[in-house]
Length: 456
Ligand SMILES: *Cc1c(COP(=O)(O)O)cnc(C)c1O
Image (cartoon, rainbow, N blue to C red; front, side):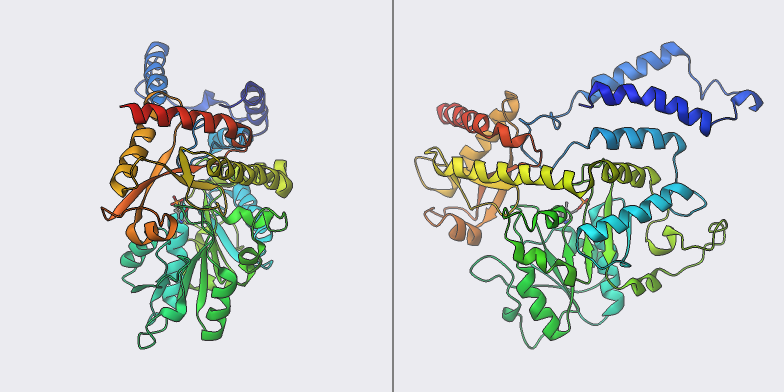
């Protein structure tokens, strides 16, 4: 929930904006259409309906929501977005969002620095991580039209889809015993990939692929690296904290392109993704002319280096304000609490006789299973689903589930009897700093849910 102190600011700030910007009153406007300006009663009624419908959501804002990768935006981001929405800048061009475009460039400079990319890298915001990855894959195809894009079994599902859209071949790098991609297992007779996608923070379990070793292979072979850090990217800021393994992160600046989503861990409302290219000459692929825009400035317009045309300038404004307000230190502190929460939950589960944690989390996603009386995959899956359902129905705890295939089961849960081709496990994304103090209560709630699920 947005705190009252932020909500109270909106009125006075709008008033100030009105004096500075909306000086022209509407007295010069011709006949106002009543169809566009319904009366108060109609307004009251539709807004009542709206509030009723909006309340039909899961409590994403609350710490007992520890399910999917959903994080409430910072209240300051909300305030900046709301204010700027009244102007509604379009960051396609400096014509549509003069100031918001400059703010987007500043935001990208900060994102560049916060991920260790060299100053002068080329980047922009996108409406999502998927579109940001599409742009990186598209550039990958333009650079190496005859060589496939390589992904891993842990890559986000949209990479395959977007390569399909680009009509470009994909090859999956086989995994080694640790579950991570091992390019030495690629068929030597097949064409060498042009670009390898490496995920820092997989969506399922928050795994960090070993970029430091993969980049060595890639540099030796002349393969480009695209890092998909849509979810995990801000963790670069924690590499020196002792809380995460620094090695893969230290290698991040050696990647050729990078995707990082401010709407995942960067406290922004949807949709705010971003893409960065270390070599700014990637901009040449975007080159086009638009006869009806790009009038007001000879400087580069963001639409000239982005696949999308219209984009919400307000997304840049909200991110700019959040960065200005919190700086890297604020994000570092928030992430370190999320990380500690995940470690604490994992440790709590290890000492618990009703649950078992699948692995020590690498970022802030914990996966675990209830210990069933039998060790069959089918039993455990059923119990996991029951716990998820009861938790949500009784409003006690919101978790999510994840299906692991039999190969992953053998690796993470070697004691299980594989009587079906997958096992459903519980998954919790602890991406709110408040989760850190909630962990003891979360463990109590899990134990209670276990008993309830076991009974019926
Ligand atoms: C979320 C995610 C995506 C997709 O990003 P959207 O913003 O949801 O489109 C891609 N890759 C990874 C690793 C993700 O976690």
